[in-house]
Amino acid sequence: MIRYIFEGLRGRGTLIDNDEYFRQISPRFEDIEIPTFVYGAWDDIFGPAALRIHRRISMPDGMFQVIINEGYHGSPGSQLGRPDGPPRLDVLQRAWFDKWLKGIDNGIDRYGPVTLQQQNGGWHTLETYPRPEAVPQRFYLDAEPSGFAAHTSLDGSLGAAAPRGRTEHRLRRRPGLLKSPTTSRLMSGMTAVLGTSGLKDSRYFERGALTFTSAAATAPWVVSGPLNLHLRTRANGAEAFWVVSVTDVAPDGFSRMLAEGALLTSRRAVDEAKSVRGVDGDYLSPWHPTGKGQKMPVEPGVSTTLDIDLTEVDAMIKTGHRLRVVISAASLPRYIPSIPELWASRHGQSVVLDPDQPSYLVAPVVIGARAGAA
Image 1: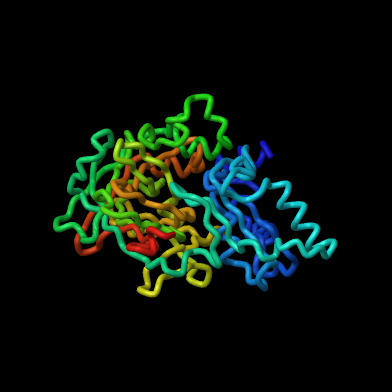
Image 2: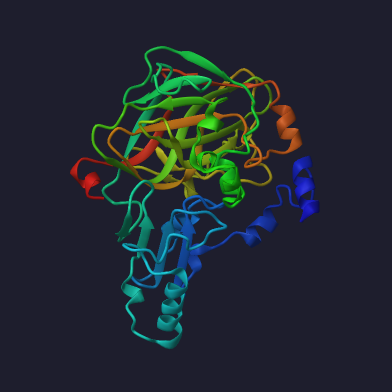
């Protein structure tokens, strides 16, 4: 394992762009036919991957169940067994095996099929995910100050209209802080010893980032599903690395990370067959292929549009709260490009805000009375 890590950092080795190897180990969820119970957590090191598995598996009702709650990779089941929530994880496991191995009719097949602890909300039972009433919506990035992120490199806004003028904003590479939500995910929550503020609060990490913050919500609304950041960029060298997160900002400024993702400009190619688009054609979940021949050239100084896939969410944006997009050029140790990729990106990079080719977050949302009841 150590050998492969060092080979990856050097950008060369037996597993680098080894198509056959990754083809063999890639899960084929669509081929699963046996009863399957998947458990996950919003801040797991793998993100809420359980919900992506749900989107790829087609089984009769009851044979596939998903439970996802608040927590980390190192705290499985920590939110279960409490009042108003599902039973303990071991109780659910026993019931599952009793049903499908012993044939005991205990009702576990009528549970869910999607049971989740909503981010900023309570427990919900859904027939499917994302919520079918969620409608994809664009949130445009604008350099106009939101007045709510003075601690960041750029306090931009997030709104319903494209910017009126063209601006360009350079990102300075800044290593991720140990006390940040991204590191907490990577370390399975062990950074709690540094204090709970950095465990959940993204403001420490945002200090060197470009941020775009919406107006305060006048009524509760819900974000449910995969997210995509459509971003106009410019690399000054032969590569650029982009780290993106979406946060919920409380009235007191606390910025809780809901979703995250990262992309190299050279890896911007999209596999249409594996990607998900909304009815309006915008990507909801772009799939970026890896392997030989998949890297695209990066021309220094030329603007390039990226679609950056972010992790799944199901979050309540409460009255007075705001949605924020955070863009940075590094998030160590969460994301580690190879040394050649870091060297190629040393000349810097910029976000280009252009009314003719706008940048925007695509998010499925539920607004109005249905959001309040979600």
